[in-house]
Image (cartoon, rainbow over all chains, first blue to last red; front, side, top):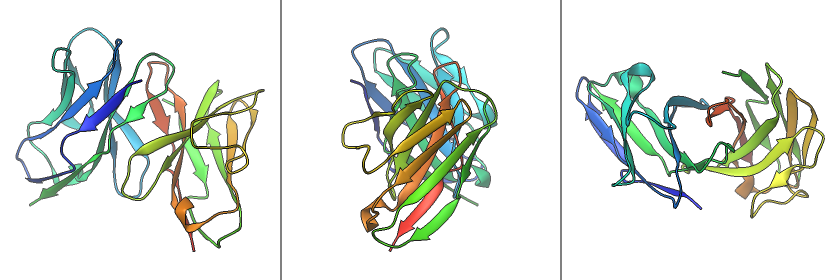
Length: 113
Length: 113
């Protein structure tokens, strides 16, 4: 079975500053990795995903993530955040294409002017 | 990506009553999934709903408490039965996107008094 650890529960950041959200996973087999964002009072929106190929994945809204197999990590980054990036961010992993995703506990990002 | 609509978006219910949540997808899909997100927590898979067969429940969730219907390829319902305050959560409907990812509805926010 796979599991996900999001190392930061809350990340305060100033507008236009960079942000990195850390995600580590454990799995004995090849994985699919995902980052989702949940804006206040909304459902989850897919930011980006890693299935195979290039380890640097670019997503929507200027986010990117890097898959590091040796470190079993999939950290999310954005070089310059906006107030509108204030949200909850979830890292998720699955072992195959069966849609059985395991989610991390989430990281709350609060962007301040 | 699929567009998923849920009803109700939020409700306040009395202890001991039951509530049925509806999920409508704008295209035919094989698998639909129901997740629970308890306050301040991550997502937990309740069950997988396939059209024409009984739903498959995850550990800790039972059909008597969370009966699910899947009458066709675009619709599913989740009932939360005999509710208690511990059932206060966001309930999310989702479906697979073809690349291993899930797409989610906006969620149904349930408060049990």
